[in-house]
Amino acid sequence: MQSIQMAFKSIMGNKMRSFLTMLGIIIGVVAVVVLVSIGQGANQSVSESIQKMGTNLLSVNINMRRNNPINLDRVNEMRRLEGVAQASPVSNSSGTLKAGLNQYEDGSIIATTPGYDVIRNYSLKYGRFITEPDVNNRSFVAVLGQEAAEELFGSLNVVGESFTWKGYPFTVVGVLNEIGTSMIGSGDNLIIIPYTVGERLFQRKGISSVYVSAMSADNVSIAQESLTSYMDRLMVGAYSSTKYNIYNQTTALKTLNTATNTLTLMLGGIAAISLLVGGIGIMNIMLVSVSERTREIGIRKAIGATRRNILSQFLVEALVLSLIGGLIGLGISVLATRLLEPALEMTLNISPSIAALSVGFSLSIGVIFGLYPANKASKLLPVIALRHE
Amino acid sequence: MIKMEGINKCYRLGGENIHALSDVSFNVADGEYVAIIGPSGSGKSTLMNIIGCLDVQDSGSYKLAGTDTSKFSGRQLAKLRNTHIGFIFQGFNLLGRLNALENVELPLIYQGVRRKQRRQRAEEALSIVGLADRMKHRPSQLSGGQQQRVAIARALVANPQIILADEPTGNLDTSTGAEIMDIFEKLNAEGKTIVLITHDTNIAARAQRSLSIVDGRIGFEAQEVM
Image (tube, rainbow over all chains, first blue to last red; front, side, top):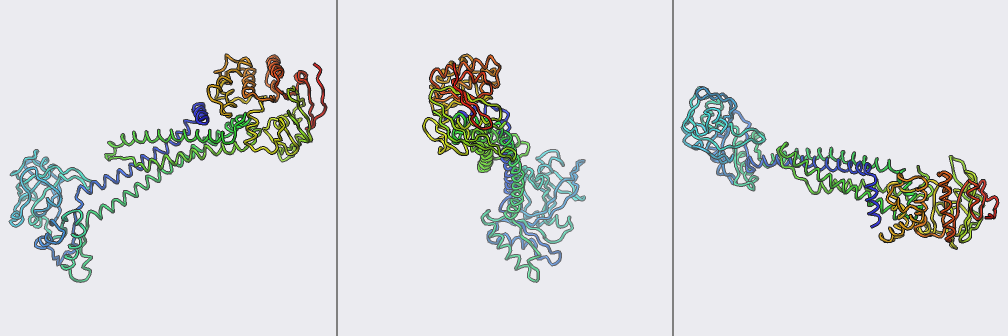
Protein backbone atom coordinates (compact mmCIF):
# COMPACT_ATOMS: atom_id res chain seq x y z
CA MET A 1 0.00 0.00 0.00
CA GLN A 2 2.72 2.43 1.02
CA SER A 3 4.78 1.66 -2.04
CA ILE A 4 1.80 2.29 -4.32
CA GLN A 5 1.21 5.65 -2.67
CA MET A 6 4.83 6.60 -2.90
CA ALA A 7 5.05 5.45 -6.49
CA PHE A 8 2.14 7.69 -7.47
CA LYS A 9 3.70 10.62 -5.64
CA SER A 10 6.92 10.02 -7.47
CA ILE A 11 5.19 9.79 -10.86
CA MET A 12 3.23 12.98 -10.26
CA GLY A 13 6.26 14.70 -8.77
CA ASN A 14 8.30 14.25 -11.91
CA LYS A 15 5.84 14.78 -14.70
CA MET A 16 8.37 15.30 -17.48
CA ARG A 17 10.23 12.10 -16.80
CA SER A 18 6.99 10.18 -16.41
CA PHE A 19 5.67 11.61 -19.66
CA LEU A 20 8.82 10.75 -21.61
CA THR A 21 8.85 7.23 -20.27
CA MET A 22 5.22 6.74 -21.23
CA LEU A 23 5.85 8.31 -24.64
CA GLY A 24 8.37 5.61 -25.46
CA ILE A 25 5.85 2.94 -24.58
CA ILE A 26 2.99 4.70 -26.37
CA ILE A 27 4.94 5.01 -29.62
CA GLY A 28 6.04 1.40 -29.48
CA VAL A 29 2.58 0.03 -28.81
CA VAL A 30 0.86 2.22 -31.40
CA ALA A 31 3.40 1.33 -34.08
CA VAL A 32 3.09 -2.39 -33.53
CA VAL A 33 -0.67 -2.55 -33.14
CA VAL A 34 -1.52 -0.25 -36.04
CA LEU A 35 1.01 -1.60 -38.52
CA VAL A 36 0.13 -5.21 -37.83
CA SER A 37 -3.58 -4.49 -38.12
CA ILE A 38 -2.94 -2.80 -41.49
CA GLY A 39 -1.06 -5.89 -42.63
CA GLN A 40 -3.87 -8.17 -41.50
CA GLY A 41 -6.46 -5.85 -43.01
CA ALA A 42 -4.72 -6.02 -46.38
CA ASN A 43 -4.61 -9.79 -46.10
CA GLN A 44 -8.30 -9.91 -45.36
CA SER A 45 -9.34 -7.60 -48.18
CA VAL A 46 -7.32 -9.64 -50.68
CA SER A 47 -8.95 -12.85 -49.49
CA GLU A 48 -12.37 -11.26 -49.63
CA SER A 49 -11.98 -10.00 -53.17
CA ILE A 50 -10.85 -13.43 -54.29
CA GLN A 51 -13.78 -15.05 -52.55
CA LYS A 52 -16.04 -12.57 -54.33
CA MET A 53 -14.77 -13.95 -57.63
CA GLY A 54 -15.83 -17.38 -56.49
CA THR A 55 -13.81 -19.95 -54.64
CA ASN A 56 -15.24 -22.73 -56.76
CA LEU A 57 -13.77 -21.29 -59.92
CA LEU A 58 -11.21 -23.19 -62.00
CA SER A 59 -9.68 -22.38 -65.33
CA VAL A 60 -8.14 -24.68 -67.90
CA ASN A 61 -5.56 -23.11 -70.18
CA ILE A 62 -4.36 -24.90 -73.28
CA ASN A 63 -0.95 -24.03 -74.65
CA MET A 64 -1.33 -25.77 -78.05
CA ARG A 65 -1.82 -23.90 -81.31
CA ARG A 66 -1.98 -26.84 -83.67
CA ASN A 67 -3.93 -30.05 -83.17
CA ASN A 68 -5.81 -28.56 -80.26
CA PRO A 69 -8.33 -31.27 -79.43
CA ILE A 70 -10.58 -28.97 -77.40
CA ASN A 71 -13.71 -27.76 -79.11
CA LEU A 72 -17.24 -26.89 -78.02
CA ASP A 73 -18.24 -30.56 -77.85
CA ARG A 74 -15.33 -31.28 -75.53
CA VAL A 75 -16.34 -28.37 -73.32
CA ASN A 76 -19.82 -29.89 -73.17
CA GLU A 77 -18.22 -33.16 -72.10
CA MET A 78 -16.36 -31.34 -69.34
CA ARG A 79 -19.68 -30.24 -67.89
CA ARG A 80 -20.52 -33.86 -67.18
CA LEU A 81 -17.28 -34.63 -65.34
CA GLU A 82 -17.37 -35.45 -61.65
CA GLY A 83 -17.49 -32.38 -59.39
CA VAL A 84 -17.94 -29.99 -62.31
CA ALA A 85 -21.03 -27.79 -62.46
CA GLN A 86 -20.41 -25.61 -65.49
CA ALA A 87 -17.79 -25.08 -68.15
CA SER A 88 -17.51 -22.32 -70.72
CA PRO A 89 -14.80 -21.43 -73.19
CA VAL A 90 -13.56 -17.87 -72.98
CA SER A 91 -11.78 -15.72 -75.47
CA ASN A 92 -10.96 -12.04 -74.99
CA SER A 93 -10.52 -9.04 -77.17
CA SER A 94 -10.89 -5.32 -77.09
CA GLY A 95 -11.73 -2.61 -79.53
CA THR A 96 -13.82 0.44 -80.25
CA LEU A 97 -17.57 0.06 -80.10
CA LYS A 98 -19.81 2.56 -81.77
CA ALA A 99 -23.48 3.38 -81.26
CA GLY A 100 -24.59 6.45 -83.15
CA LEU A 101 -22.16 9.18 -82.20
CA ASN A 102 -21.01 7.44 -79.01
CA GLN A 103 -17.79 5.50 -78.90
CA TYR A 104 -16.60 3.15 -76.18
CA GLU A 105 -12.98 2.09 -76.11
CA ASP A 106 -12.47 0.68 -72.63
CA GLY A 107 -14.63 -2.38 -73.13
CA SER A 108 -13.48 -5.90 -72.54
CA ILE A 109 -15.01 -8.10 -75.21
CA ILE A 110 -15.55 -11.65 -74.08
CA ALA A 111 -16.71 -14.43 -76.33
CA THR A 112 -18.25 -17.32 -74.42
CA THR A 113 -21.18 -19.73 -74.16
CA PRO A 114 -24.29 -19.94 -71.95
CA GLY A 115 -23.30 -20.92 -68.41
CA TYR A 116 -20.53 -18.34 -68.16
CA ASP A 117 -22.93 -16.12 -66.20
CA VAL A 118 -23.39 -18.93 -63.69
CA ILE A 119 -19.66 -19.56 -63.43
CA ARG A 120 -18.90 -15.90 -62.72
CA ASN A 121 -21.99 -15.24 -60.59
CA TYR A 122 -23.29 -12.63 -63.01
CA SER A 123 -26.95 -11.75 -62.89
CA LEU A 124 -29.03 -9.83 -65.42
CA LYS A 125 -30.73 -6.54 -64.81
CA TYR A 126 -32.48 -6.47 -68.17
CA GLY A 127 -33.02 -9.02 -70.95
CA ARG A 128 -31.28 -12.39 -71.17
CA PHE A 129 -27.85 -13.96 -71.38
CA ILE A 130 -26.25 -15.61 -74.46
CA THR A 131 -28.17 -18.77 -75.37
CA GLU A 132 -27.36 -22.03 -77.12
CA PRO A 133 -29.09 -20.93 -80.37
CA ASP A 134 -27.05 -17.69 -80.32
CA VAL A 135 -23.91 -19.80 -80.32
CA ASN A 136 -25.12 -22.27 -82.92
CA ASN A 137 -26.47 -19.57 -85.28
CA ARG A 138 -23.59 -17.18 -84.80
CA SER A 139 -26.01 -14.46 -83.89
CA PHE A 140 -24.60 -10.96 -83.58
CA VAL A 141 -26.01 -10.35 -80.11
CA ALA A 142 -24.34 -8.99 -76.98
CA VAL A 143 -24.84 -8.71 -73.22
CA LEU A 144 -23.40 -5.49 -71.79
CA GLY A 145 -21.96 -4.54 -68.45
CA GLN A 146 -23.43 -1.42 -66.88
CA GLU A 147 -20.52 0.86 -67.67
CA ALA A 148 -20.55 -0.25 -71.32
CA ALA A 149 -24.32 0.34 -71.57
CA GLU A 150 -24.03 3.79 -70.00
CA GLU A 151 -21.17 4.83 -72.24
CA LEU A 152 -22.74 3.61 -75.45
CA PHE A 153 -26.38 4.51 -74.93
CA GLY A 154 -26.49 6.80 -71.93
CA SER A 155 -28.91 4.55 -70.09
CA LEU A 156 -29.20 1.02 -68.71
CA ASN A 157 -32.39 -0.33 -70.21
CA VAL A 158 -30.99 -0.76 -73.70
CA VAL A 159 -32.26 -4.19 -74.71
CA GLY A 160 -32.99 -4.13 -78.44
CA GLU A 161 -30.58 -1.27 -79.17
CA SER A 162 -27.67 -1.94 -81.48
CA PHE A 163 -24.02 -0.97 -81.82
CA THR A 164 -21.26 -1.82 -84.25
CA TRP A 165 -17.86 -3.34 -83.76
CA LYS A 166 -15.43 -3.75 -86.65
CA GLY A 167 -18.34 -2.74 -88.86
CA TYR A 168 -20.57 -5.60 -87.71
CA PRO A 169 -23.89 -4.65 -86.12
CA PHE A 170 -24.72 -6.24 -82.76
CA THR A 171 -28.07 -6.26 -81.01
CA VAL A 172 -28.11 -5.85 -77.21
CA VAL A 173 -30.06 -8.73 -75.64
CA GLY A 174 -29.19 -8.17 -71.97
CA VAL A 175 -27.61 -5.84 -69.41
CA LEU A 176 -25.82 -7.19 -66.34
CA ASN A 177 -26.33 -6.07 -62.77
CA GLU A 178 -23.56 -3.96 -61.31
CA ILE A 179 -20.52 -6.11 -60.58
CA GLY A 180 -18.28 -3.50 -58.98
CA THR A 181 -14.55 -3.22 -59.06
CA SER A 182 -12.38 -5.96 -57.73
CA MET A 183 -8.62 -6.27 -57.60
CA ILE A 184 -8.53 -7.31 -61.21
CA GLY A 185 -10.26 -4.14 -62.34
CA SER A 186 -13.72 -3.02 -63.24
CA GLY A 187 -16.27 -5.73 -63.92
CA ASP A 188 -18.75 -3.42 -65.54
CA ASN A 189 -16.99 -2.87 -68.84
CA LEU A 190 -17.92 -6.27 -70.27
CA ILE A 191 -19.31 -6.90 -73.74
CA ILE A 192 -20.25 -10.56 -73.86
CA ILE A 193 -20.86 -12.14 -77.28
CA PRO A 194 -21.47 -15.74 -78.45
CA TYR A 195 -18.30 -17.81 -78.61
CA THR A 196 -18.71 -18.68 -82.29
CA VAL A 197 -19.04 -15.01 -83.25
CA GLY A 198 -15.90 -14.21 -81.32
CA GLU A 199 -14.01 -17.02 -83.00
CA ARG A 200 -14.74 -15.45 -86.35
CA LEU A 201 -14.17 -11.80 -85.45
CA PHE A 202 -11.10 -12.35 -83.26
CA GLN A 203 -9.68 -14.51 -86.08
CA ARG A 204 -8.68 -17.09 -83.54
CA LYS A 205 -9.42 -20.77 -84.05
CA GLY A 206 -9.65 -23.27 -81.23
CA ILE A 207 -10.27 -22.96 -77.54
CA SER A 208 -7.35 -21.91 -75.38
CA SER A 209 -9.15 -21.06 -72.15
CA VAL A 210 -12.07 -22.74 -70.41
CA TYR A 211 -13.67 -21.44 -67.22
CA VAL A 212 -15.07 -24.18 -65.00
CA SER A 213 -17.08 -23.97 -61.83
CA ALA A 214 -17.05 -26.80 -59.32
CA MET A 215 -20.27 -27.99 -57.66
CA SER A 216 -19.15 -26.24 -54.48
CA ALA A 217 -16.00 -24.88 -52.90
CA ASP A 218 -15.43 -28.31 -51.31
CA ASN A 219 -15.58 -29.99 -54.72
CA VAL A 220 -12.82 -27.91 -56.26
CA SER A 221 -10.15 -30.57 -55.83
CA ILE A 222 -12.45 -33.34 -57.14
CA ALA A 223 -13.28 -31.22 -60.17
CA GLN A 224 -9.61 -30.49 -60.68
CA GLU A 225 -8.75 -34.20 -60.55
CA SER A 226 -11.43 -35.20 -63.02
CA LEU A 227 -10.44 -32.37 -65.33
CA THR A 228 -6.83 -33.42 -65.15
CA SER A 229 -7.54 -37.03 -66.07
CA TYR A 230 -9.89 -35.90 -68.84
CA MET A 231 -7.24 -33.57 -70.30
CA ASP A 232 -4.56 -36.25 -69.99
CA ARG A 233 -6.71 -38.64 -71.97
CA LEU A 234 -7.20 -36.06 -74.73
CA MET A 235 -3.61 -34.98 -74.95
CA VAL A 236 -1.83 -38.23 -75.49
CA GLY A 237 1.82 -38.07 -76.29
CA ALA A 238 4.99 -36.53 -75.10
CA TYR A 239 4.83 -33.50 -72.82
CA SER A 240 1.08 -33.81 -72.64
CA SER A 241 1.02 -32.39 -69.15
CA THR A 242 2.93 -29.30 -70.23
CA LYS A 243 0.41 -28.49 -72.89
CA TYR A 244 -2.27 -27.39 -70.52
CA ASN A 245 -2.62 -26.26 -67.00
CA ILE A 246 -5.48 -26.10 -64.55
CA TYR A 247 -5.62 -23.22 -62.19
CA ASN A 248 -7.97 -22.89 -59.25
CA GLN A 249 -8.88 -19.96 -57.01
CA THR A 250 -7.94 -21.79 -53.85
CA THR A 251 -4.38 -22.02 -55.10
CA ALA A 252 -4.54 -18.36 -56.07
CA LEU A 253 -5.86 -17.53 -52.64
CA LYS A 254 -3.01 -19.41 -51.04
CA THR A 255 -0.42 -17.68 -53.20
CA LEU A 256 -1.82 -14.27 -52.42
CA ASN A 257 -2.13 -15.10 -48.76
CA THR A 258 1.53 -15.96 -48.70
CA ALA A 259 2.28 -12.60 -50.26
CA THR A 260 0.16 -10.63 -47.84
CA ASN A 261 1.49 -12.63 -44.91
CA THR A 262 4.95 -11.54 -45.98
CA LEU A 263 3.64 -7.98 -45.98
CA THR A 264 2.26 -8.41 -42.47
CA LEU A 265 5.54 -9.86 -41.36
CA MET A 266 7.45 -6.95 -42.89
CA LEU A 267 5.18 -4.37 -41.27
CA GLY A 268 5.47 -6.30 -38.02
CA GLY A 269 9.24 -6.15 -38.34
CA ILE A 270 9.21 -2.39 -38.81
CA ALA A 271 6.84 -2.12 -35.87
CA ALA A 272 9.07 -4.31 -33.73
CA ILE A 273 11.96 -1.96 -34.49
CA SER A 274 9.93 1.03 -33.33
CA LEU A 275 8.97 -0.89 -30.22
CA LEU A 276 12.64 -1.52 -29.63
CA VAL A 277 13.46 2.16 -30.20
CA GLY A 278 10.68 3.05 -27.76
CA GLY A 279 12.21 0.59 -25.32
CA ILE A 280 15.62 2.19 -25.71
CA GLY A 281 13.97 5.54 -25.01
CA ILE A 282 12.53 4.19 -21.79
CA MET A 283 15.89 2.71 -20.93
CA ASN A 284 17.62 6.05 -21.52
CA ILE A 285 15.29 8.05 -19.32
CA MET A 286 15.46 5.49 -16.57
CA LEU A 287 19.25 5.41 -16.66
CA VAL A 288 19.64 9.18 -16.92
CA SER A 289 17.63 9.65 -13.78
CA VAL A 290 19.90 7.22 -11.97
CA SER A 291 21.99 9.79 -10.08
CA GLU A 292 19.01 11.75 -8.84
CA ARG A 293 17.33 8.55 -7.80
CA THR A 294 20.44 7.14 -6.18
CA ARG A 295 20.50 10.11 -3.80
CA GLU A 296 16.81 9.69 -3.13
CA ILE A 297 17.40 6.04 -2.33
CA GLY A 298 20.26 7.05 -0.03
CA ILE A 299 17.99 9.42 1.88
CA ARG A 300 15.25 6.83 2.14
CA LYS A 301 17.71 4.21 3.39
CA ALA A 302 19.21 6.63 5.90
CA ILE A 303 15.83 7.10 7.56
CA GLY A 304 15.10 3.40 7.67
CA ALA A 305 13.91 2.07 4.33
CA THR A 306 14.91 -1.53 3.66
CA ARG A 307 16.02 -2.75 0.26
CA ARG A 308 12.62 -4.36 -0.16
CA ASN A 309 10.84 -1.08 0.54
CA ILE A 310 12.90 0.64 -2.14
CA LEU A 311 12.48 -2.11 -4.73
CA SER A 312 8.74 -2.44 -4.29
CA GLN A 313 8.31 1.34 -4.64
CA PHE A 314 10.28 1.40 -7.89
CA LEU A 315 8.59 -1.74 -9.19
CA VAL A 316 5.15 -0.24 -8.66
CA GLU A 317 6.34 3.02 -10.21
CA ALA A 318 7.63 1.29 -13.34
CA LEU A 319 4.56 -0.94 -13.58
CA VAL A 320 2.12 1.94 -13.26
CA LEU A 321 4.01 4.07 -15.79
CA SER A 322 4.33 1.29 -18.34
CA LEU A 323 0.78 0.12 -17.88
CA ILE A 324 -0.70 3.60 -18.26
CA GLY A 325 1.55 4.15 -21.27
CA GLY A 326 0.48 0.83 -22.77
CA LEU A 327 -3.20 1.58 -22.27
CA ILE A 328 -2.88 5.06 -23.76
CA GLY A 329 -1.02 3.44 -26.66
CA LEU A 330 -3.85 0.98 -27.17
CA GLY A 331 -6.40 3.79 -27.04
CA ILE A 332 -4.52 5.75 -29.68
CA SER A 333 -4.23 2.60 -31.78
CA VAL A 334 -7.99 2.08 -31.71
CA LEU A 335 -8.48 5.72 -32.71
CA ALA A 336 -5.85 5.50 -35.44
CA THR A 337 -7.32 2.36 -36.99
CA ARG A 338 -10.80 3.95 -37.01
CA LEU A 339 -9.35 6.99 -38.77
CA LEU A 340 -7.31 4.93 -41.22
CA GLU A 341 -10.12 2.55 -42.13
CA PRO A 342 -11.90 4.87 -44.59
CA ALA A 343 -8.60 6.18 -45.95
CA LEU A 344 -7.24 2.70 -46.70
CA GLU A 345 -10.63 1.24 -47.65
CA MET A 346 -10.15 -1.88 -45.56
CA THR A 347 -11.40 -3.26 -42.29
CA LEU A 348 -8.75 -2.88 -39.61
CA ASN A 349 -9.07 -5.09 -36.58
CA ILE A 350 -6.74 -4.96 -33.62
CA SER A 351 -5.61 -8.46 -32.86
CA PRO A 352 -5.78 -9.09 -29.10
CA SER A 353 -2.66 -11.21 -29.15
CA ILE A 354 -0.61 -8.48 -30.84
CA ALA A 355 -2.00 -5.89 -28.43
CA ALA A 356 -1.14 -8.10 -25.46
CA LEU A 357 2.31 -8.83 -26.89
CA SER A 358 3.23 -5.20 -27.46
CA VAL A 359 1.90 -4.02 -24.11
CA GLY A 360 3.63 -6.94 -22.42
CA PHE A 361 6.90 -6.12 -24.14
CA SER A 362 6.84 -2.46 -23.15
CA LEU A 363 5.77 -3.44 -19.67
CA SER A 364 8.77 -5.69 -19.25
CA ILE A 365 11.15 -3.09 -20.71
CA GLY A 366 9.73 -0.48 -18.34
CA VAL A 367 10.00 -2.77 -15.37
CA ILE A 368 13.48 -4.07 -16.18
CA PHE A 369 14.96 -0.65 -16.76
CA GLY A 370 12.99 0.95 -13.96
CA LEU A 371 14.21 -1.63 -11.50
CA TYR A 372 17.77 -1.80 -12.77
CA PRO A 373 19.00 1.51 -11.31
CA ALA A 374 16.87 1.05 -8.21
CA ASN A 375 18.31 -2.40 -7.57
CA LYS A 376 21.85 -1.15 -8.07
CA ALA A 377 21.35 1.81 -5.76
CA SER A 378 19.48 -0.12 -3.10
CA LYS A 379 22.47 -2.40 -2.64
CA LEU A 380 24.78 0.50 -1.84
CA LEU A 381 25.61 1.56 1.68
CA PRO A 382 23.46 4.61 2.51
CA VAL A 383 26.56 6.77 2.85
CA ILE A 384 27.70 5.96 -0.68
CA ALA A 385 24.24 6.49 -2.17
CA LEU A 386 24.00 9.82 -0.37
CA ARG A 387 27.30 11.01 -1.76
CA HIS A 388 25.82 10.83 -5.29
CA GLU A 389 25.29 14.37 -6.51
CA MET B 1 24.35 4.15 24.75
CA ILE B 2 27.25 4.25 22.26
CA LYS B 3 30.29 2.09 22.88
CA MET B 4 33.08 2.09 20.29
CA GLU B 5 36.26 0.08 20.53
CA GLY B 6 39.19 0.05 18.16
CA ILE B 7 37.24 1.23 15.10
CA ASN B 8 39.21 1.32 11.84
CA LYS B 9 38.02 2.52 8.47
CA CYS B 10 39.88 2.85 5.19
CA TYR B 11 38.77 4.44 1.94
CA ARG B 12 40.18 4.05 -1.50
CA LEU B 13 40.18 7.43 -3.12
CA GLY B 14 41.76 7.79 -6.55
CA GLY B 15 43.80 4.63 -6.13
CA GLU B 16 45.11 5.80 -2.77
CA ASN B 17 44.23 4.25 0.57
CA ILE B 18 43.06 6.82 3.02
CA HIS B 19 42.96 5.85 6.63
CA ALA B 20 39.87 7.75 7.71
CA LEU B 21 39.65 6.27 11.20
CA SER B 22 42.33 4.49 13.14
CA ASP B 23 41.73 2.77 16.42
CA VAL B 24 38.92 5.00 17.57
CA SER B 25 37.45 4.17 20.96
CA PHE B 26 34.97 6.19 22.96
CA ASN B 27 31.68 5.97 24.84
CA VAL B 28 28.61 8.10 24.97
CA ALA B 29 26.32 7.65 27.93
CA ASP B 30 22.57 7.66 27.85
CA GLY B 31 21.21 11.22 27.77
CA GLU B 32 24.57 12.79 27.10
CA TYR B 33 25.19 15.72 24.72
CA VAL B 34 28.54 15.23 22.99
CA ALA B 35 30.23 17.33 20.36
CA ILE B 36 32.87 15.87 18.06
CA ILE B 37 35.12 18.59 16.76
CA GLY B 38 37.74 18.42 14.08
CA PRO B 39 38.95 20.08 10.90
CA SER B 40 37.68 18.92 7.52
CA GLY B 41 39.22 15.64 6.43
CA SER B 42 39.79 14.58 10.00
CA GLY B 43 37.43 11.62 9.68
CA LYS B 44 34.66 13.06 11.82
CA SER B 45 31.99 12.52 9.16
CA THR B 46 33.14 8.95 8.66
CA LEU B 47 32.85 8.41 12.38
CA MET B 48 29.37 9.92 12.38
CA ASN B 49 28.28 7.69 9.49
CA ILE B 50 29.42 4.62 11.36
CA ILE B 51 27.60 5.75 14.52
CA GLY B 52 24.49 6.30 12.39
CA CYS B 53 24.83 2.88 10.74
CA LEU B 54 25.05 4.49 7.31
CA ASP B 55 28.48 2.97 6.90
CA VAL B 56 30.27 -0.05 8.34
CA GLN B 57 33.65 -0.14 9.98
CA ASP B 58 36.48 -2.31 8.65
CA SER B 59 37.36 -3.57 12.11
CA GLY B 60 36.57 -2.89 15.74
CA SER B 61 33.36 -3.23 17.67
CA TYR B 62 30.44 -0.83 17.82
CA LYS B 63 27.66 -1.41 20.31
CA LEU B 64 24.52 0.67 20.10
CA ALA B 65 22.14 0.47 23.06
CA GLY B 66 23.91 -2.70 24.14
CA THR B 67 23.72 -4.60 20.85
CA ASP B 68 26.68 -5.32 18.60
CA THR B 69 25.88 -3.93 15.16
CA SER B 70 28.70 -5.60 13.27
CA LYS B 71 26.73 -8.82 12.74
CA PHE B 72 23.54 -7.07 11.65
CA SER B 73 22.03 -7.69 8.23
CA GLY B 74 21.01 -4.82 5.95
CA ARG B 75 17.45 -5.30 7.04
CA GLN B 76 18.29 -5.12 10.74
CA LEU B 77 20.47 -2.05 10.19
CA ALA B 78 17.59 -0.37 8.35
CA LYS B 79 15.33 -1.08 11.29
CA LEU B 80 17.94 0.27 13.69
CA ARG B 81 18.28 3.50 11.67
CA ASN B 82 14.53 3.75 11.54
CA THR B 83 13.73 3.34 15.23
CA HIS B 84 16.84 4.17 17.25
CA ILE B 85 18.62 6.91 15.36
CA GLY B 86 17.57 10.32 14.13
CA PHE B 87 20.11 11.59 11.62
CA ILE B 88 20.48 15.26 10.72
CA PHE B 89 22.68 16.13 7.76
CA GLN B 90 24.56 19.26 6.90
CA GLY B 91 22.82 19.36 3.50
CA PHE B 92 19.36 18.62 5.02
CA ASN B 93 18.73 15.73 2.58
CA LEU B 94 15.02 16.29 2.24
CA LEU B 95 13.10 14.84 -0.71
CA GLY B 96 12.36 17.79 -2.95
CA ARG B 97 9.18 16.36 -4.41
CA LEU B 98 7.49 15.97 -1.04
CA ASN B 99 6.22 18.74 1.21
CA ALA B 100 7.43 19.25 4.78
CA LEU B 101 4.74 17.05 6.29
CA GLU B 102 5.33 14.20 3.84
CA ASN B 103 9.09 14.39 4.43
CA VAL B 104 8.56 14.10 8.17
CA GLU B 105 6.14 11.20 7.70
CA LEU B 106 8.68 9.09 5.79
CA PRO B 107 10.31 7.26 8.74
CA LEU B 108 6.84 6.35 10.04
CA ILE B 109 5.85 5.01 6.62
CA TYR B 110 8.74 2.57 6.81
CA GLN B 111 7.61 1.61 10.32
CA GLY B 112 4.19 0.80 8.95
CA VAL B 113 2.36 3.38 11.09
CA ARG B 114 -1.18 4.04 9.94
CA ARG B 115 -1.88 7.15 7.92
CA LYS B 116 -3.95 9.01 10.48
CA GLN B 117 -1.52 8.43 13.31
CA ARG B 118 1.39 9.17 11.02
CA ARG B 119 -0.05 12.55 10.10
CA GLN B 120 -0.71 13.42 13.70
CA ARG B 121 2.79 12.52 14.85
CA ALA B 122 4.39 14.37 11.95
CA GLU B 123 2.35 17.47 12.74
CA GLU B 124 3.46 17.25 16.37
CA ALA B 125 7.11 16.93 15.39
CA LEU B 126 6.83 19.96 13.09
CA SER B 127 5.23 22.01 15.87
CA ILE B 128 8.12 21.14 18.19
CA VAL B 129 10.55 22.72 15.72
CA GLY B 130 8.20 25.67 15.19
CA LEU B 131 7.02 24.92 11.67
CA ALA B 132 3.34 24.23 12.32
CA ASP B 133 2.41 26.85 9.71
CA ARG B 134 4.71 25.56 6.96
CA MET B 135 3.62 21.94 6.71
CA LYS B 136 2.43 22.04 3.09
CA HIS B 137 5.53 23.81 1.80
CA ARG B 138 8.07 22.00 -0.29
CA PRO B 139 11.75 22.23 0.72
CA SER B 140 12.42 24.64 -2.16
CA GLN B 141 9.85 27.03 -0.68
CA LEU B 142 11.56 27.05 2.72
CA SER B 143 14.67 28.87 3.96
CA GLY B 144 17.78 26.93 4.96
CA GLY B 145 16.95 27.20 8.65
CA GLN B 146 13.40 26.04 8.04
CA GLN B 147 14.62 23.11 5.93
CA GLN B 148 16.98 22.06 8.70
CA ARG B 149 14.09 22.23 11.15
CA VAL B 150 12.06 19.96 8.87
CA ALA B 151 15.03 17.58 8.91
CA ILE B 152 15.13 17.74 12.71
CA ALA B 153 11.39 17.02 12.85
CA ARG B 154 11.99 14.04 10.57
CA ALA B 155 14.75 12.82 12.90
CA LEU B 156 12.47 13.24 15.92
CA VAL B 157 9.24 11.81 14.57
CA ALA B 158 10.07 8.15 15.19
CA ASN B 159 11.06 9.06 18.76
CA PRO B 160 14.63 7.69 18.62
CA GLN B 161 16.91 7.65 21.64
CA ILE B 162 19.84 9.15 19.76
CA ILE B 163 20.01 12.24 17.60
CA LEU B 164 23.05 12.43 15.35
CA ALA B 165 23.79 15.76 13.71
CA ASP B 166 26.51 16.13 11.09
CA GLU B 167 27.42 19.83 10.95
CA PRO B 168 23.78 20.83 11.31
CA THR B 169 24.59 24.53 11.21
CA GLY B 170 27.22 24.28 8.48
CA ASN B 171 24.96 25.65 5.77
CA LEU B 172 23.22 28.23 7.96
CA ASP B 173 24.01 31.78 9.09
CA THR B 174 24.96 32.41 12.72
CA SER B 175 21.57 33.45 14.08
CA THR B 176 19.62 30.60 12.44
CA GLY B 177 22.41 28.27 13.54
CA ALA B 178 21.90 29.47 17.10
CA GLU B 179 18.16 28.75 16.85
CA ILE B 180 18.92 25.24 15.69
CA MET B 181 21.35 24.77 18.56
CA ASP B 182 18.62 25.90 21.00
CA ILE B 183 16.44 23.09 19.67
CA PHE B 184 19.20 20.55 20.36
CA GLU B 185 19.58 21.78 23.89
CA LYS B 186 15.87 21.51 24.44
CA LEU B 187 15.87 17.96 23.09
CA ASN B 188 18.77 17.03 25.34
CA ALA B 189 16.92 18.47 28.30
CA GLU B 190 14.05 16.11 27.40
CA GLY B 191 16.42 13.17 27.70
CA LYS B 192 17.65 12.53 24.15
CA THR B 193 21.23 11.46 23.62
CA ILE B 194 22.81 13.90 21.16
CA VAL B 195 26.01 13.53 19.18
CA LEU B 196 26.94 16.53 17.11
CA ILE B 197 29.75 17.08 14.66
CA THR B 198 31.18 20.50 14.04
CA HIS B 199 34.37 22.35 13.17
CA ASP B 200 33.17 25.37 15.13
CA THR B 201 34.51 25.52 18.69
CA ASN B 202 31.73 27.90 19.76
CA ILE B 203 29.14 25.34 18.86
CA ALA B 204 31.11 22.53 20.44
CA ALA B 205 31.34 24.61 23.60
CA ARG B 206 27.58 24.36 24.07
CA ALA B 207 27.75 20.56 24.44
CA GLN B 208 28.35 18.86 27.78
CA ARG B 209 31.45 17.21 26.50
CA SER B 210 33.54 17.56 23.37
CA LEU B 211 35.84 15.11 21.62
CA SER B 212 38.48 16.27 19.24
CA ILE B 213 39.37 14.21 16.20
CA VAL B 214 42.48 14.80 14.11
CA ASP B 215 43.71 12.57 11.28
CA GLY B 216 41.30 9.82 12.21
CA ARG B 217 42.31 9.66 15.86
CA ILE B 218 40.50 10.88 18.93
CA GLY B 219 42.77 13.54 20.35
CA PHE B 220 41.66 14.80 23.71
CA GLU B 221 38.54 14.56 25.71
CA ALA B 222 37.47 17.71 27.50
CA GLN B 223 34.81 17.95 30.10
CA GLU B 224 32.73 20.98 29.40
CA VAL B 225 31.99 23.37 32.19
CA MET B 226 28.70 25.00 31.69
